[in-house]
Image (cartoon, rainbow, N blue to C red):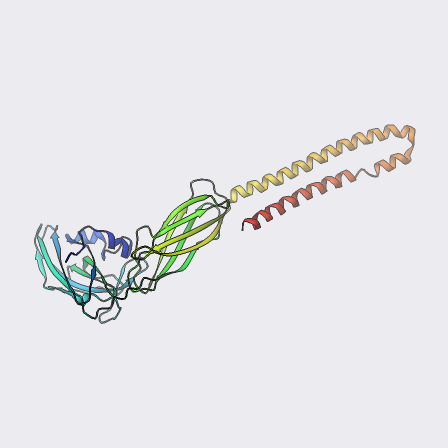
Length: 365
């Protein structure tokens, strides 16, 4: 039987925890001076079958050290991608550790020494179909990890993921697709996508997030779950990505996600939302410019009419010598009318501008 696992493979690390599925921080692994290969074992299995593997542990510590071997089930993942270990005797539906047959005898490694650790996984005939996940730890103490995923003395682990044949259900749904705000002053938008796995196997939803402007032109393309992090059965996981536009952005934008998942990549999840980018400084400058233009027009018209009024008064004074006071009073009674007309023009221009901006906003909303 061919078992497809390889040392240095990052497939399941990225899939299960987006790079954090090592049960310990790499620095701690170095602190005990031990490397274990393979770090990931991902395999398909048939009920009733037995699979055989070998771990290779190499000491890079300058001193000899005793190590312990322990196995644990994983019941889920925390928000940060860290594993949540099942409590002793807890039924999760993802059990695997009891299937692992490996010597639990502690062993000693001298500097530079390598030890091959054989083990097998005997899949029960009545094993439930779908995902089963566990870990094999090489540690400096024999204490089991806490249910929070933080283990005392646990340094290096190999992740084991089996997909048991049977009635496989691949089913995921979108629980949330949103931005952190509805209106932005600059094009720096954080998108949040929450997906629920309602099936019985691990799913790795991944796909593009396409952004278009109010004229339908492409404004950017992002990738949801670019690292192909996984969602365990009956679990929900949130993914975030950020859009930073390189050019000037203004108006209403639409974001469309098309996420695919499943073994053949044929199942899809789609959703859309809209948001606004309204640069405050630019808008203030435009409004200030409009108001300034209206004031300039108002003052210019007023000065022009005042000049014309002065010329009219001069002409009226000249006419008064021959025409008498009655006609002069009739002309002067109209001297306030030009000023009222100028004010009316300015008000009409301002109202028209505000209405235009409001219609533009409503139209693109």
